[in-house]
Length: 122
Image (cartoon, rainbow, N blue to C red; front, side, top):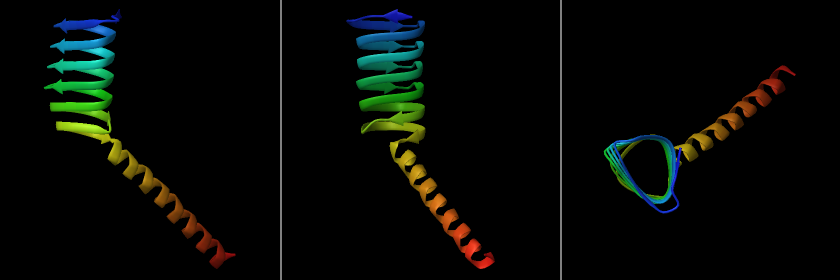
Protein backbone atom coordinates (compact mmCIF):
# COMPACT_ATOMS: atom_id res chain seq x y z
CA UNK A 1 0.00 0.00 0.00
CA UNK A 2 1.33 3.40 -0.91
CA UNK A 3 0.03 6.75 0.24
CA UNK A 4 1.14 10.06 -1.16
CA UNK A 5 -0.47 13.39 -0.43
CA UNK A 6 1.36 15.17 -3.24
CA UNK A 7 2.36 14.32 -6.77
CA UNK A 8 3.45 10.80 -7.60
CA UNK A 9 4.86 8.99 -10.60
CA UNK A 10 4.93 5.21 -10.72
CA UNK A 11 6.62 3.27 -13.49
CA UNK A 12 6.88 -0.51 -13.86
CA UNK A 13 5.71 -1.20 -10.34
CA UNK A 14 3.05 -3.30 -8.60
CA UNK A 15 1.07 -1.85 -5.69
CA UNK A 16 -2.01 -2.84 -3.78
CA UNK A 17 -3.38 0.69 -3.27
CA UNK A 18 -2.23 4.20 -4.14
CA UNK A 19 -3.73 7.48 -2.89
CA UNK A 20 -2.42 10.78 -4.26
CA UNK A 21 -3.37 14.28 -5.38
CA UNK A 22 -1.83 13.87 -8.85
CA UNK A 23 -0.69 10.46 -10.01
CA UNK A 24 1.03 9.24 -13.16
CA UNK A 25 1.20 5.49 -13.87
CA UNK A 26 3.26 3.92 -16.62
CA UNK A 27 3.38 0.16 -17.20
CA UNK A 28 2.22 -0.63 -13.68
CA UNK A 29 -0.29 -2.93 -11.99
CA UNK A 30 -2.33 -1.47 -9.15
CA UNK A 31 -5.38 -2.85 -7.41
CA UNK A 32 -6.87 0.51 -6.31
CA UNK A 33 -6.13 4.12 -7.25
CA UNK A 34 -7.62 7.22 -5.60
CA UNK A 35 -6.50 10.64 -6.80
CA UNK A 36 -7.69 14.08 -7.84
CA UNK A 37 -5.93 13.77 -11.22
CA UNK A 38 -4.49 10.68 -12.90
CA UNK A 39 -2.55 9.88 -16.04
CA UNK A 40 -2.49 6.12 -16.64
CA UNK A 41 -0.53 4.63 -19.55
CA UNK A 42 -0.15 0.94 -20.45
CA UNK A 43 -1.20 -0.19 -16.97
CA UNK A 44 -3.64 -2.56 -15.31
CA UNK A 45 -5.85 -1.10 -12.58
CA UNK A 46 -8.52 -2.81 -10.51
CA UNK A 47 -10.51 0.24 -9.38
CA UNK A 48 -9.62 3.81 -10.37
CA UNK A 49 -11.45 6.64 -8.60
CA UNK A 50 -10.59 10.24 -9.50
CA UNK A 51 -11.94 13.67 -10.47
CA UNK A 52 -10.15 14.12 -13.81
CA UNK A 53 -7.99 11.66 -15.63
CA UNK A 54 -6.52 10.28 -18.80
CA UNK A 55 -6.18 6.57 -19.41
CA UNK A 56 -4.34 5.27 -22.47
CA UNK A 57 -3.77 1.71 -23.72
CA UNK A 58 -4.77 0.19 -20.38
CA UNK A 59 -7.25 -2.12 -18.70
CA UNK A 60 -9.34 -1.40 -15.62
CA UNK A 61 -11.95 -3.31 -13.64
CA UNK A 62 -13.88 -0.16 -12.71
CA UNK A 63 -13.33 3.51 -13.52
CA UNK A 64 -15.16 6.18 -11.51
CA UNK A 65 -14.49 9.82 -12.33
CA UNK A 66 -15.99 13.20 -13.11
CA UNK A 67 -14.17 13.67 -16.41
CA UNK A 68 -12.38 10.83 -18.22
CA UNK A 69 -10.37 10.87 -21.45
CA UNK A 70 -9.60 7.40 -22.79
CA UNK A 71 -7.65 5.95 -25.68
CA UNK A 72 -7.71 2.19 -26.38
CA UNK A 73 -9.05 1.28 -22.93
CA UNK A 74 -10.96 -1.81 -21.82
CA UNK A 75 -12.96 -1.58 -18.61
CA UNK A 76 -15.65 -3.60 -16.89
CA UNK A 77 -17.58 -0.74 -15.30
CA UNK A 78 -17.41 2.93 -16.27
CA UNK A 79 -19.14 5.58 -14.17
CA UNK A 80 -18.53 9.12 -15.40
CA UNK A 81 -20.74 11.92 -16.68
CA UNK A 82 -18.04 13.10 -19.12
CA UNK A 83 -16.21 10.51 -21.25
CA UNK A 84 -14.08 11.23 -24.31
CA UNK A 85 -12.20 8.80 -26.51
CA UNK A 86 -12.04 5.13 -27.42
CA UNK A 87 -13.26 2.90 -24.59
CA UNK A 88 -14.75 -0.59 -24.57
CA UNK A 89 -16.88 -1.26 -21.51
CA UNK A 90 -19.20 -3.97 -20.25
CA UNK A 91 -21.38 -1.64 -18.17
CA UNK A 92 -21.59 2.15 -18.28
CA UNK A 93 -24.09 4.62 -16.84
CA UNK A 94 -26.42 4.54 -19.87
CA UNK A 95 -26.59 0.77 -20.04
CA UNK A 96 -27.07 0.53 -16.25
CA UNK A 97 -30.07 2.89 -16.47
CA UNK A 98 -31.46 0.91 -19.43
CA UNK A 99 -31.05 -2.38 -17.55
CA UNK A 100 -32.77 -0.92 -14.47
CA UNK A 101 -35.61 0.47 -16.56
CA UNK A 102 -36.00 -2.89 -18.31
CA UNK A 103 -36.12 -4.72 -14.97
CA UNK A 104 -38.86 -2.40 -13.68
CA UNK A 105 -40.89 -2.83 -16.87
CA UNK A 106 -40.42 -6.61 -16.67
CA UNK A 107 -41.70 -6.69 -13.08
CA UNK A 108 -44.72 -4.57 -14.01
CA UNK A 109 -45.45 -6.82 -16.99
CA UNK A 110 -45.22 -10.00 -14.86
CA UNK A 111 -47.45 -8.49 -12.16
CA UNK A 112 -50.05 -7.61 -14.80
CA UNK A 113 -49.99 -11.17 -16.18
CA UNK A 114 -50.36 -12.65 -12.67
CA UNK A 115 -53.31 -10.35 -11.96
CA UNK A 116 -54.98 -11.33 -15.24
CA UNK A 117 -54.48 -15.06 -14.53
CA UNK A 118 -55.95 -14.66 -11.03
CA UNK A 119 -59.05 -12.95 -12.45
CA UNK A 120 -59.59 -15.73 -15.01
CA UNK A 121 -59.03 -18.62 -12.56
CA UNK A 122 -60.45 -16.95 -9.47
